[in-house]
Amino acid sequence: MKKITTLCFLMASISNFAQQNNLDSISNWTKKGTFTLLFNQASFSNWIAGGENAVSGTVSINYDFNYKRGNWAWDNKIITKYGISNISGTGSRKTDDQFEFNSLVSKKTSTNWSYSFFTNIRSQFTTGYDYSSAEKKVTSDFFAPGYITIGPGIIYKKSDHFNINIAPATTKATFVSEDFSGQYGTEIGETSLYQLGFYTSIYYKATLMDNVTVENIFNAYANYLEEPQNIDLNYQINFVMQINKYLSTNLNLHMIIDDNASRYIQFKQLFGLGVNYIF
Image 1 (cartoon, rainbow, N blue to C red):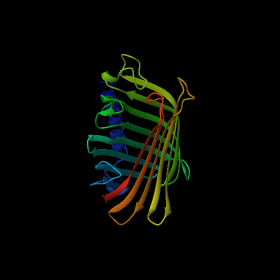
Image 2: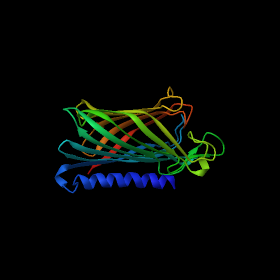
Image 3: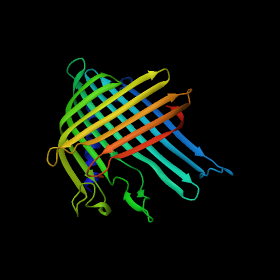
Image 4: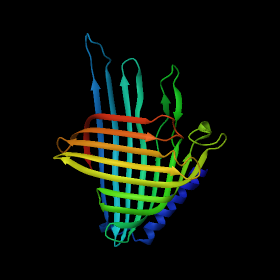
């Protein structure tokens, strides 16, 4: 119930902002989306060195829809990924699962500085498993955990490819289902955790050479109320080497440090041939 109430509040706030700023003015909107199918495959026949047939695919949608009117701006970004692999003798397993929504409202105070208010929602679509033991163990599910982070601050935005947002009074809410009560920082018997802390995010996208770009998405959070020295970090790097309009070579690196989720550094790497469609 708490999850539904919080989500309804966020949606109502966004709707209210839209009405107040006459967002029906289509000319003030810019929208861009990219659909990518990342593909990897290995096949063996009478191969003396050994090996197992494997095929994997990851579908991702990256969509931006931004609004600007006078000194006001409303920037939104949706990142979704889902991947599956099939290895001979092992079967199908999930290789990637991500849903992330970023929304930032800002009012310019000078050339590059603005007041800001941001919302970040992170979770996944389906059940996650740990395959390290003989019997697979359920480790996560849809919105379990789910993270909602909101807060006011200031943002330095030099261009659409570079900005730094600083929010010193940020609320972070972690939600789990009853099956995961006592995990991801929650107390036993509880399904939510609320924190107050300092948040900063950095976005930087650069062109390394012709048809080669790198995108950096970084954020950090320190909880004032408990162990502020244990800073949560989330860092993504996306390299794209464009072959032609529809084909590219993609490399995605993703690192997460979150003591409430795991005492280890989480790291993920995806590399393959991408089929892209821009809409």
